[in-house]
Length: 102
Image (cartoon, rainbow, N blue to C red):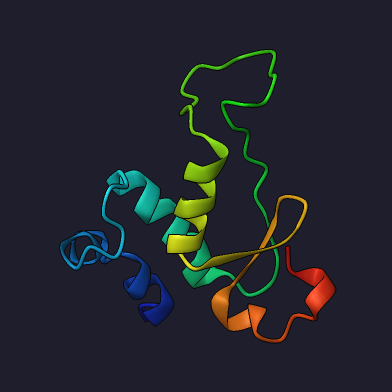
């Protein structure tokens, strides 16, 4: 069975922390966001809610984060905003037109 090289690149959480690329982030944040960015071959719809949003319902296992925290996590992982809850990886974003990028 062949190993996807993109996946290997997404799994170096400890190395990224050691290089302070993702300093201050929890390991699960780095792994999840950087894995999405690494494997992304199109647009990702990531519906995330912040501490500033009024939410109702089940908040069990919800991680309260501010808008700035989410933006930093996504940007540090290589995700570029391109619409409402939509993100591209950096490689794809270079081909986006100006009005696509937020």
